[in-house]
Length: 295
Image (cartoon, rainbow, N blue to C red; front, side, top):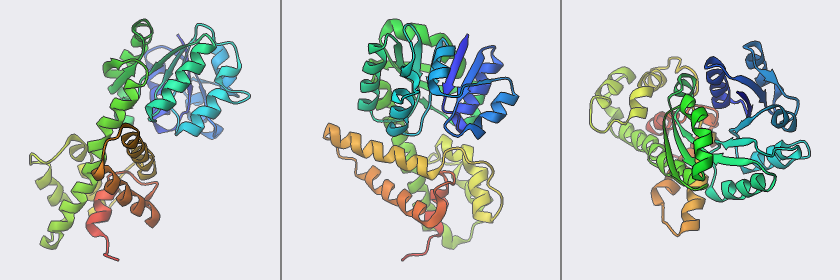
């Protein structure tokens, strides 16, 4: 199938590589064209504009930074909807508030396109292996059309309901993960006077019932940070996490739900970013909090 991907940051690039590996012809577009070069070298076609990408492909996947990027990529003068998209399938995978998605779906359908949302859980490794966790929102017939593609990207695709329900569930699933990095930071701060090195500390914590999968997977990275070593590549940076945290706070307010833990966690992530850690992996918040000097 001819599949287009608009937005080839870390996740988008990994998804593109996965889809090429399973036999699809992939065309990519990115605002920063430099990011398309490794994919072009691997066999992907590169579109000059989102509209050109939409014109060339049967299905278009978008995984973008925020609502402003979505608005530009879809609605700009050379955006995805600037060309004839009647009958084309759009799979939107960005993590944003549900209202952004429901409004976008109306615009795509008004142009004759088919719209499915499927934000995903997972990082670059699972994306590259086709083991993401898909949270789909779609009408049943549209979901059936998208599922063969999504099944090649995800180990599980959960149809959560109509468009907008996937976005709600993605924010809900991300919520305890974000809080956990702050919780681990406070736990590490509590016991730092004991003098454990990073490796010993992670070995102890990951062998307890308090360890989630994220801590277990990132234990070597965190240990390296504590011990002054190389933590390896970033999977999901602090500034991206801050964007998701702000969406959670806003969605809670829109639904009349109090989220005091998320509000406090956002303040902690903001503090880490102000101190120059915005581009680092989200797990750095735990190390930052454990080692910060009280102001």
